[in-house]
Length: 242
Image 1: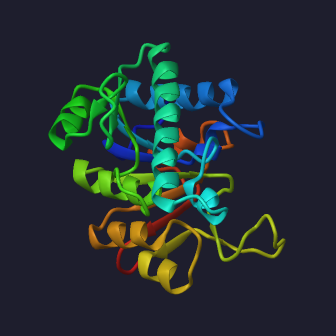
Image 2 (image 1 turned 90 degrees about the horizontal axis):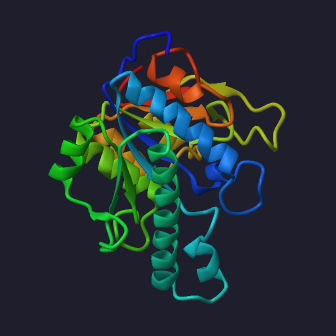
C-alpha cells in the first residue's frame, strides 16, 4: 500500500453476488482470493476490518417468498447462506495468514461465534478481521441494514459498499447510457431521489449516526485499498451539507 490509510476502522459491505465473479452461482475461488488479498493488504497497514456479506449468490428469501414460501422461513434460509459465504472468506483469509473470526447473529456455535459487540471490538483491536454473518438475526431486514447497524455498534469510521459499478449514478448505468455519476451526495438526497444505494432503513441508520459511506467498484482490482487511503474513487455519501 503506497498511501497511508485515512480510516482506522472500516466496515466492508459485500453482496453475495460479489463472490460469484464470472460464475452464475456460488463462489468463484479466483474472485474471493482477490478480495481476501486486498483485505490482507489493509490489515498489514493496521486498518481494522469488519465485513458483512450477503447471501444472494446462494439464496434470496424474498425471491422464494414471491413463489409462495413463507417469508420468515425464506429469510432464515438466506441468513444461513451468509454463513456459508462468511466461512468461505474466513478460510481464504486464514490461508493468507490473516486471523479472522466469524460472528453470527444466529446461534451456530459449532462453526462460528455468537455476536457479542464487546468481543467483536476486541477482535478488531487485536488485528483480526471480523465477519458478521446471519444479518441481524431477524427476518425482513437486509444485510445492508445489518452492515449499517454493526458499523455503528463497533464505531466504524466509514462503511465501504462494494458494487459492480464505479459509484452512485442518477439511474442504472447498465440500462441508461446517459446515466450521470454522482461523486458526493447527502443521505437526505439519496432518500428524496430514491437512489438505489442501499435500502432506506440502512440509509437512515447511517444518516442518524453520521456514518460516511463510500460506494466503489469491487470489480476493479485495488479499488478497495484506494478507497481506504482516501483516493478519489467511487462516490461518497455523508450527512448534512457537502
